[in-house]
Image (cartoon, rainbow, N blue to C red; front, side, top):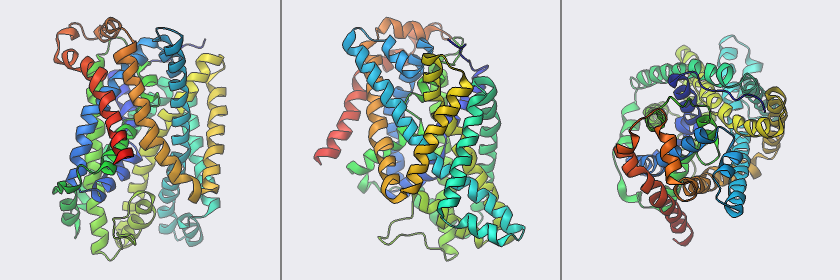
Length: 449
């Protein structure tokens, strides 16, 4: 079997893992979900679910991954106590691979849009009007080309391996992402209308906090944001050095992801109301705030157009930000099926990455060609339903199937005396009882109410 990679440092892991967690879902999904679902009420529910359900599930994946030093399927099979739980591990592992592949197939479409818009602004500044118009138009040829280009970049990084690909580019891209995001926040806050957007984002309206759809959206956002339930963090965990404290790095990843989501809200919501003050329509036909892809490809470009010469520069910075966010997440998604094929079929990383990357590209292009029928359905199925349910099974494996002593021995690596910490007194009970029951309760509430 080919030698497994390993992150060279804690910083390298944190940049790679936070890059996986911090993506387009944080930058446009979270803030617009918050605005459309009671503002601070959604923010509060999201924070409760991140640290109450998603973070314990993140720890479960990291612990399984480092213990098994393998892909998701083999890792779960290795924890089995008999034929039944081994079969369950196989099903959950393959379901995670399928889910993450479908997520990447729609994610590549949006990543392609970001690349196209990042190129459009320089083309317009250079006076290339025909190219600018083509890049702005939501045409099939543009979407196919940039979808394939985005997948090509993802494939190239994964081909390079853990240290020279995932870690190397994570440590370069994540600091750039933070600096660009911070700069855009500072600039947008100086514009008319920004304070109105800030009020919508931060002033609470708790009347919708117990709405089942809000809760399921917040749960899906939390699991999607932290890349949970599909084996991504399990595979990244398998590359963590045994010298690292898993309880420490797990908290750091969750805190970094939540901080970026919050910062993204400080950019997107004020920017939307700056656009409204400039005469750009930010509400759809039903009176709700424009969210999702409509925000990215309609509202914000229209806002940049109102800024004159500065708008072109801001547009380039923003869409480079979005492209980086998309790429740091897409590489973690592709690593999941690639790790499985490399470790079980014994073929080279280059070949495995190319074959799987081309297959996912073909699926993605199928969605592009049937966008109205497939896109929203694939997004909902994978992020709101599949990910949290798969996260539940990861919790079951750690809480009920894997022996408690084995979990503790893995945590002791890099953290001597962890059994005396508050984490160990709290987390095993939580992952065994609270997480599965709470996740199931959310779905029961959705189905029956």
